[in-house]
Length: 96
Image 1: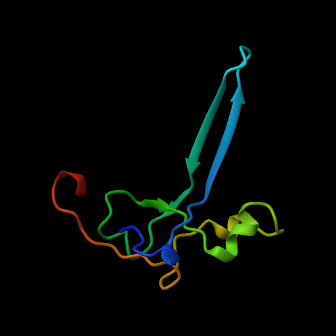
Image 2 (image 1 turned 90 degrees about the vertical axis):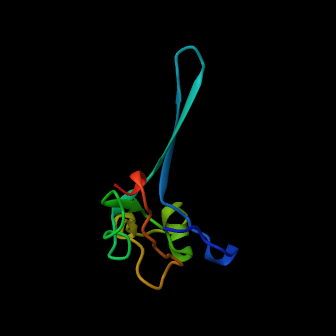
């Protein structure tokens, strides 16, 4: 996948974060990007069968908890035409 070329084409990945406070007071922060099965655009050329979940702007309030909704419905590969994605095969060891 290529990164967006315009700010209007920005990607927002679904993710989770956590802050764990140790008994000594130190805090460890961890972050995760949620993935899903690769879509038809990426699957034929991608080395893995997973890609990040890209949230549409209309999904942000639901994902962030500001609006009720079913979070599981949001966990899918980008729909063709919805996100500005293009895919191009890479040559070499990284493509295996």
